Amino acid sequence: MTPVQTPPDLRALTGLRFLAALWVVLYTAWPHLDVGWVPVAVTRGYLGVEVFFVLSGFILSHVYLEAAGRKRYSYGGFLWARIARVYPLHLVTLFGMVALGVAGTAAGLSIDGSLTDWRALPAHLTMTHAWGLAPISAFNHPSWSISAEWFAYLTFPLYALVAWRLRDRPFVAVAGAVALALAIYAIFQPLAGFSLTEATFRWGALRIVPCFALGCALYLVYRRAPVPYAGPVALISGLGLIVSASLGLWDPVTVLLAGGLILGLGSLDNARAGLMGSKAAVYLGEISYSIYMVCAPVLLVMTNVAARVTGADDKRFHIIVWLVVVAAIPVTAMATYHLVERPARKALRGLADQRRARRSATKPHTDSPERVLQPTKTIV
Image (cartoon, rainbow, N blue to C red; front, top):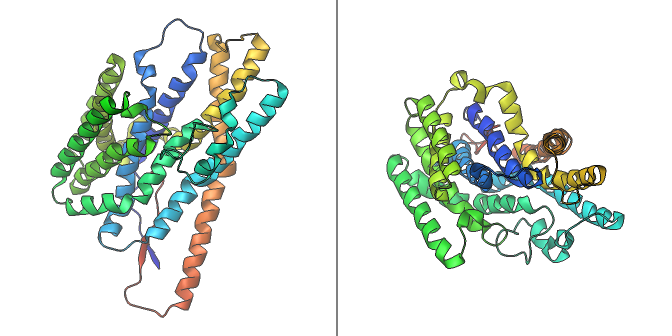
């Protein structure tokens, strides 16, 4: 099995990952800030997950669509690469929350009893806790989105099949994806009594579907030709996203504007990516998964410690204390990225490479070796 050259790295989209993670962090941490107001855009911070979902569809199509469409990729290899990407850190944060729950209870700290509800453990271990298979939200709650991503990974061949057939009609694909998204959002809310963009461990697997499909469709536009005036497209879409979130408009409007932002930034070559493609932005984007996954456990520890130190029993802190609490999240994320996420991913992919090498050594030579795409840094 002979690897082929990967598609170019889209640095601006890697930088965007950090901004999406930061939006989620602000949404999660703001209730611990002792102020009398909350910006509406912060209350919509859960939509940072939607940005990740659209990015995931776009980037996985960027890396794998050509190979999938031409029957030149291994589905098993694709899933193994996805497991290598998300599972090790998921396990560490899962059992980290278990340890914190047990230790916190023993130390007399304020710990929600659902944190260690063992009934949810099998679904968490199999990354199916956003499929309605977990009886309660437990452990590291934000990991529901990793379960949703796993659902999208498993069904990626279906997305790829549709996208490949529409590769010469990208705007038809986008129109179809937009129509599908609006229909799902419009139908779900009256049936469930809440917006799909607020679903987590019960309907999270459905929540990713319209976003992932939109990302795949937008990639077809990029694949045909990067959009002209990519900078203005990204700027207008980004400003529109901020305005939409700040005004509290219907969530799907913000999601669609996020799609425009992704298409614009993705169409920028790295030389013109500016701040979004800088080394600092790319590094922060690379650790964004760690930022997202350690946010809950770090806040659990830091808010309890800060409450003990400051005497703020309501866990609402002065802005200086709050900034220290929040700053602990990226610091911890750097550690988990370099000590867990990156080396575990490298090790698991190394095992796959060794297996491919052994298979190649035992197979007779052919003129048409199977080709496998290797993932790029921009994979979400």
